[in-house]
Amino acid sequence: MTKRATRIHIYNRWLATLGGGEKYALSMAVQLARMHAVHVISHEPVDKVFLADRLDLDLSAVEFVTVPAQAACDLGPVSSGCDVFINASHGDIIPAQAPHNVLLVFFPVKLRLDLASRWRRRVGLAVKRLLPRAARELIFSRYWLTQSQLSEWNLRLNSIPKRLATFEDLDTYSSIWAISEFTRKWIGAYWNRPSVVLYPPVATHRLAPSTKQNQILSVGRFFAGSHNKKHLVMMLAFKKMVDQGLAGWTLHLAGQVTPGAEHQRYFEQVRAQCTGYPIVVHTDISSAQLATLYGESAIYWHASGFGDNVDVDPIKFEHFGISTVEAMAAGCVPVVIGSGGQPEIVQHGENGFLWQSLDELNAYSWQVIRDLRLRTTVAQNAVKRSDKFGVPAFGKHLDDLCDLILNPSA
Image 1 (tube, one colour):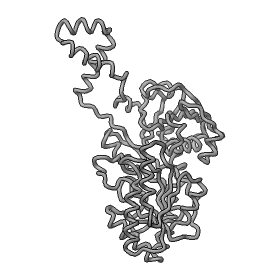
Image 2 (tube, one colour):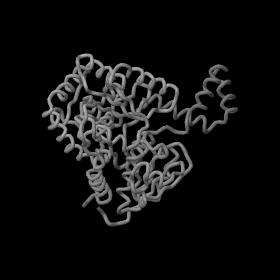
Image 3 (cartoon, one colour):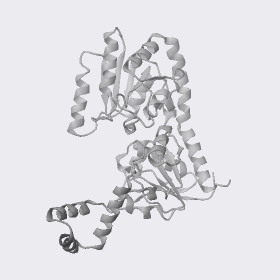
Image 4 (tube, helix red, strand yellow):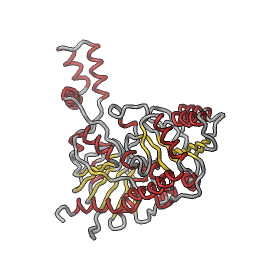
C-alpha cells in the first residue's frame, strides 16, 4: 500500500439508515483510514460513537462531513478536493470530479434511454430554459397547438427534472466495483461496462459453532413485497417435512420487522403460520442473541427470489448473501436457493447445498438431517469457506484495488 497520505472521500446518501450498504461503506472507510486521510460524506449529522457501537467498527480515524441534500446530478462538488472519490451510495450516480473516481455498485440502476425519448427530453429542457411560459403559450397557441395540447405541453415541461443520470455521468468513473459476480454480470448487461468484484466484509471472526441443536435457521427482515425473504415459502416447506414425519426439529426465523401497516400485516401472516408447528419467530434481537442462534443451529435456509424470474427481475434476488456467510462461519450447513449471489458462496455438495425447487429444498434438508457424518463434514467445510469473505480478505483486496488506482504502472 502506498505510504502517501492520500485524501479519500466516501459518499453515502443513506448513512443515517445504518443498513448493510452503509456498514459496507464504513468498513471500507475504516480499512482505508489506516494509511490515508478518509472523509465520509452524507446529508445528516451522525454520532460517531453511536455508529461505532452499533456497527462494531473502530471509526476513530475516520472524519465525517455533512453537506446539504441535493439531487445526485448536483453533487459533483462533493467529489472534488480529494485524490480518490468513492461513491458508495446505492442508486446515486454523481458526475464525479476527482482525479480518481470509483463507483461501488450493490446492484445497477437502469440507465437505458431510447434515442427518441432522450431527444424529446433535451428539446423539452431547451424550450423550458430558453422560453418563459408566457412566450411559449403565445408562440405555440398561435402556430400549431390547441389549448388542450398547450396544457399538456406545460404539464410535461414542468415535470421534467433538471437532469437524470446519464451514461456520461457513468463515464466520469475510472473504476466500477461490484459487490458480487452476480452484480458484475448485470452491470455488464445494463451498462456495458467492465467492473471488478469486491465482496462485502463479513465479521466471520465473531461467529463460531457451539453445541448444535436440531434446528433450522433463516435470517432476514420481515417485509411485504415480491422482494421479501420468502418466509412463508420456507414455512410451507418445513411444515411439509413435519407432516412427513420430521420430529424433534425446530424452524427459527430471525429478523427486524419493517415499520408500516403493510409490513405489519405480512408479519402477522408469518406468525399465524406458526400455529401447530415447531416454528419460532425472533424479532429485533441483539447481535449477541443472533450469534447464539447461528452457533446453535445445524442448518441454514435462504429462499430470496424463489418464484421470480432471475432473467426478468434480477434485483429481486439476493445480490450477495451476508447472512449465508455468517451462518457458515457458525458451522451451519447452508441449504440455499441456487440463484443470485448464493452460488458464489456455496459450493454444492462440498460446503452446502443449492436448490431450485421446494422438493429439492426438502430432499437436501432430509439428507443433512439423516446423515450426521455428512452434516459434520459439510459444516466443517462451510466454516473454512467463510474465511474467503472475512474482514482480512476484504481488507487485502481493497488495498490491492487502491494500489492499482494510485500506482497503475507499479
